[in-house]
Length: 505
Image 1 (cartoon, rainbow, N blue to C red):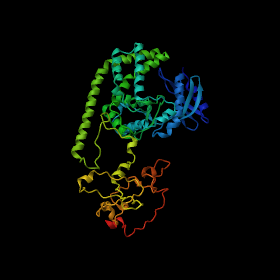
Image 2: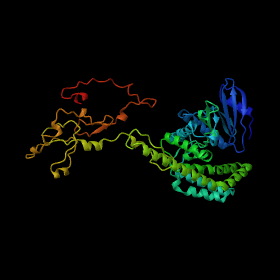
Image 3: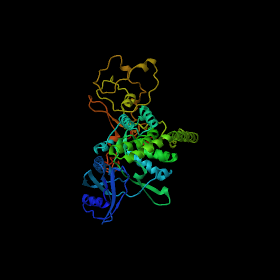
Image 4: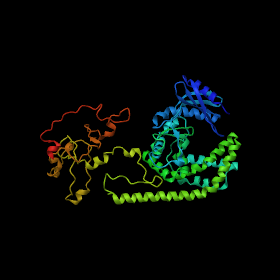
């Protein structure tokens, strides 16, 4: 079905109140396109895009993207189409949104530089989105195993058509049956991250390094799945050094580092892209698209061996650059220097992944309390336990059998009467409890950033801890302000038996 640009302009006017079209420009379509698109300029010099579906499936996709744009639009660092109105058509509903500024990129001509780094950071920002947001918008969700089986099912359907060469079928089947290749953490994926869908603006038209990524279009294939799918066109068209630059910026901005097989799966996704086009054309009855795609698959079958040799050489060069960078860093920098920068690393090589969020929280003080709390002397006949203190390092026991005696529990208990004959075995005169001039609250060995252990006053209560990270106030914008909203400072008078820290120094 072909709609005229004037008809699409009328749809935009009916979908958005106050939109008075002045000019309209139709976008030339291609066989197999899911949408018909036109650019509309209204009487207020605003530029709009109207996108009408060609099939019922495309109409359902537009409805889902309308929900996603309202949830995701304000969470991204770059612009995305924000649907402002919908107009009913036989295939569903046409969407109208303000045109995102910028020009599409050519990944084949992209070179390492600031713009390349922005492409990597943009991809990382998309993949860092919470899964629940996509699920709330009704986007498909796959784990690693489900996604692998889905592609195996597509391969079986394509093999039944007879249009896919046997060599490609065998090649792709071996890759999909290699379970070790498909061990990845699912991410929120754009789905069609191609150069024509990435818009950039340039401060200087003659200098490509002055470009900035402004927006990302075409979110209809967004899902939770394999992050390698968004690298498919970069892995197939971009030069090797450009792909490395994108991966480096991507890895620095990702919450989780990319897995070791990301580039291999990205190349596989690029190879299998015509297969999906073939299946879609067969389903819609577009025989001319089927013939053209079958020719592309036969041409791909003839050049995969040459591409494999080229990719193997690129991977070897990437590994060699990583090894040389690590050797230079180890030779020049002192490994014990805390201020030395981390050496360069290859995102496609094995690595130690980032720790889980639960492992980066405050350290529990339970083990520290068990090791550092001094034993309480209950043989003195007093019912009042001593206040918590930080003991001095234990000295070597004079009797070898003393080292095997278990330490008494630090939990307050009922007072025990002194046992005759054991009063002389109380704490020795040199014990730390006999030093009244030392205060545990001024001990310089206590780190102020650790959770503060608090002893319960009630004898039946157990020790607990206050986590300073959780106790700090939270700001609405996600930034902790340690001044605003904090309580007033309470003056503390230093007693003679507790001199100030600088006085003791």
